[in-house]
Length: 493
Ligand SMILES: [Zn+2]
Image 1 (cartoon, protein in one colour):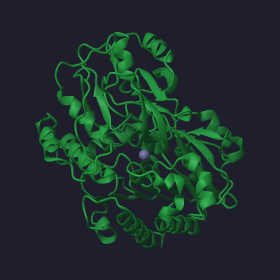
Image 2 (cartoon, helix red, strand yellow; image 1 turned 60 degrees about the vertical axis):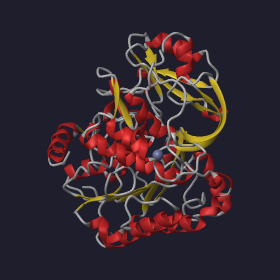
Image 3 (cartoon, rainbow, N blue to C red; image 1 turned 180 degrees about the horizontal axis):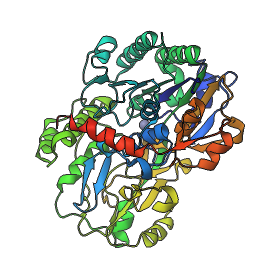
Image 4 (cartoon, protein in one colour; image 1 turned 120 degrees about the vertical axis):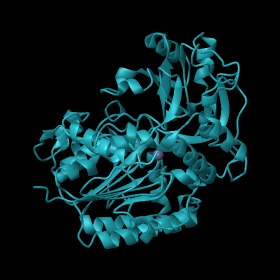
């Protein structure tokens, strides 16, 4: 059936706008070469955040169907945020689907990456993003190829040795190449959060780029079909729009009288982009975290993310002034950083959207205009993004006292990349617009591999127009639900 093969290389946060510059700088001459690889597509990622975007790209569906909208979810009944894990994933990803169809795959860092969900035909390594410890199936694979340092420092030296590890793993595994190899690297995201010099001169990481380029060549040489993708972009912003300040002034949000417990979870993410130079996460914050009523896996993830951001940003993690939100008494609010939207608690989302649309620098939609599916209710009622192209991004999830803050803040933007170098003419790329939604990546990959597509994929019309073979649809969700339940039963909490 599926005689086609495909390799996918994921570069977390590589911005579309940087493509031209990377080409000019001559780094990674295989990847960034529009003569050999083509111009590529602008990949629209909403919300532009790692834990939500990669599952969309790996499954062909929006977060309303796979269930993950950000690092955290907001429990509307309990009025508190909790960390997402693979337990919140509700839709199979491409390697799981291939397994159900009896096809092998090799996946490095599928997101969500913890707990690792085994798939019978997939070789999986999870050891870069958010997992609290390196994991692989078969067990022990990561020890054979990757640096033993854990948690890693995420400096260039580590990243270079990590890429070399992937290469060694591939060289062994590709002696008998599985139909799909998908490798996702947390680069350049991991560097951009602390240092945006790459934007001005992509050649400053030329040694790392050289290794990544070799990896891409290795994949292409073995597969003849390669997609290079990123899960969102990154850019420098001039203004932060404090949405909770708008909601406070308009009578929707109520400040908390005291710092609430859930605030501290949010502050973990706040530390991104601050100027302090400390590398270690302060003990006080650890203690705070321990006091949180987080249990089991959620607590492990929280500690892991704290460590991760501390080491990754090289910046101090600390509590900031301003008021947190009283979730009980507020009628509409942004609960945490990277929420990309407003959760309502009694307020009419249409009214909230109308109010927010009066403010400069915001793009505002009702949930149903962006997300659909059985889990759409986990997402915000009003979806909000900064007007990225005009230099606006969102402020912290507190009431800080002003609506607009002038800043030099660099963070995620909406536009990732979809580059392709394909020997097979399985996909009619010209039938696609320059801008395509991120979930199209998974659907096109499955079209190329000629496996039946999930019956609930988004933008069916776009997929059918560009897929050069006839598409069969299947419902894989029941199978995934059972497999997930079995996999999570064995996880120590
Ligand atoms: Zn990302």
